[in-house]
Length: 171
Image (cartoon, rainbow, N blue to C red):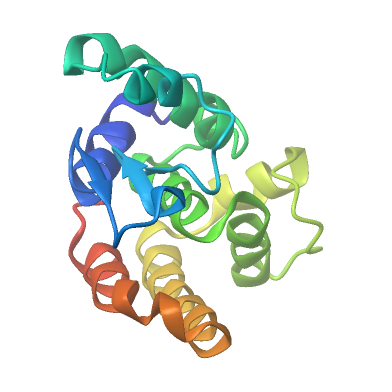
């Protein structure tokens, strides 16, 4: 079964590492280790960042906790047979959202699209051909990023990074 650690390591690397990034002057556009202040404003790490009390040793457990709890556990990554598939779905959940990523998986598997990574989805996923699924997932992710950018032109600045992340990531 798949392991959270390699998936986490790859996603953090693809997200720019353990750094604070502010896009423009807007604090809402801040990310730390790929964690968006706008989308994950509840994260406990923001209090440390706001107090200027953040260093990697302190932040790493908080970052890991958010990614494991909000993404890996949501996709039931520990129950997915192939590491590459689990890591790619996890990364799609991080970049596209959990429910859209799961619906994408269910669409590829041609099963009921309910947005839940339940027993039926896990069972179908664990029976699928790994290389065929990965090829199809990459195509669907790129299509999804194009849709995001077409719906919101402000997201276009992320498109090339999302495509590179999808095509070139080790999983």
